[in-house]
Amino acid sequence: FPAMVLNNHKSLQTIMGAPGVKGKKVTAIPKDGLTDFIRSVVISEKQELKEPFYVLDLGVVASLMDNWTCNLPTVRPFYAVKCNPDPAFLGAMAALGSGFDCASQAEIESVLSLGVSPDRIIYANTCKPESHIKCAAAVGVNLATFDSKDEIEKIQKFHPKCALLLRIKAPDDSGCRCPLGLKFGTLPEEVVPLLQAAQSAKLTVLGVSFHVGSGTTNFSAYRTAIAAVKTVFDAASRLGLPKMHVLNVGGGFTAGLDFQDAANSVKSAIQEYFDNEQGLTVIAEPGRFFAESAFTLATNIFGKRVRGELREYWINDGVYGSMNCVLNDHATVNNPMPFACTSNRGNPACRGMRTYCSTVFGPTCDALDMVLTGHQLPELQVNDWLLFPKMGAYTAAAGSNFNGFNTAAITTSLAYSDQD
Ligand code: PLP
Figure 1: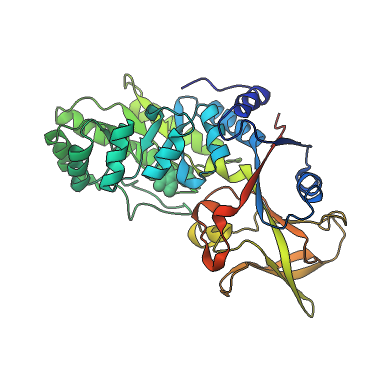
Figure 2 (figure 1 turned 90 degrees about the vertical axis):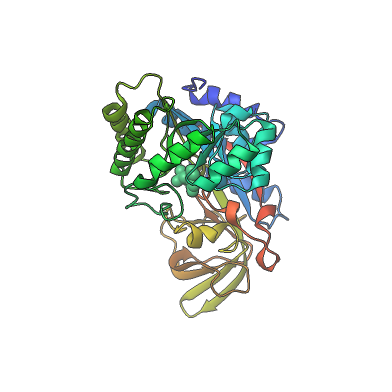
């Protein structure tokens, strides 16, 4: 793992040369000036632009990697591509030394196309289609997770050189936004039969993975899960299997003040349960931590209705697009608050301006396509912009083309702000 405790400027220089970034226009954002940036650089320069777009702040990505490395220096991140597969973002993560958690053939191919070597990829989907396993074998992605006998049989048949991590169900996934335990992970009583099945299939189980649930605020869940991993390592040695040495602590991390607490829980549990473990490799599969705050979504208001004191607006992205996170990721898009940006009338969100109870709808013909209700906004007009910060995690990645509003067509503008 390249030591990436670089200062922000060096990290940025590294990112600028990354595939997906190199050769693209990257604009500096003045301090506290995202609204100005969007107004002056994107809106004013391209008055005709009305489509929604993302702003990816590469300075935020660099500083998140520094933050990760400072708090979890011995835990190598394998960024979970599913969270946001934007090519420039993946390129930045690759340049910063991250590995990648891929869940499918397409994700593997998109990471390899950046020039990342296959040994920096973990195929971390416990049940994989045969054709995708064959692809992993062909391109040399040789590490994958599993939690069932049928998966062992498929991997033995189509990728016998693949090393494995046994995914266990995290014993405690309370306190997370999206629990994963109903679908993924072995139960304690299944561990020994699965290890024996892997041994019979002549597949090597290098270690264990888990996921405490996405967006967790229950950091003791890492400790409980790491304790459970230790019991699997012990079971493997009792069975006389080759010594396990990989501990994959999965995802669940969120950037911000709480990250240090999550990191401390991971570190203290590793110290407690694996203190004497020679040659232990610890990895993680963070998604939200890196993607969420790096992206701001700019949407254009194309419709308005006034009903007494109520203001209703239509924007050109919604719950069938980027805001599918409201349904799929149990997210709210009002924390932090969206803010308005007009091209030529100054910032209407400034203090002291009268606000109205407002509803914001997405563009489709479904009444479910409602982004905000009962939200205080200044009086806005058709063609103004509404900006949504922290929109990088599980947003565009899962958007659809419903009603012809194509999420995949939303572009990304690259920028950087100085985070030092
Ligand atoms: N790893 C696996 C196997 C996942 O399923 C997920 C999310 O669903 C992640 C990592 C990323 O999780 P997060 O975004 O909570 O860090």
